[in-house]
Length: 82
Image (cartoon, rainbow, N blue to C red; front, side):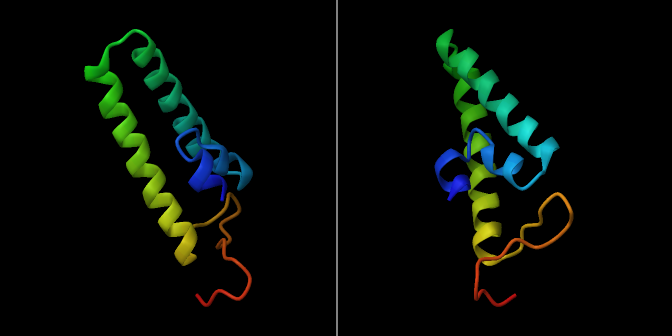
């Protein structure tokens, strides 16, 4: 749920202890926000697209049980067959 709601900010990466990906996602979002506020849409929109595509990929991997946490364990929901 965190990935679907707060995916572009990267909160879900921090929750599963993938600190590098969390910092990357959060940094990318902050850079996007700065360019958006400066009304430099030529840079802001591609950054947002990159972040959204990354979020969709991670969310998909989470849903199918192919995403690993910071310890290397698969993240699955109860009853999910892997």
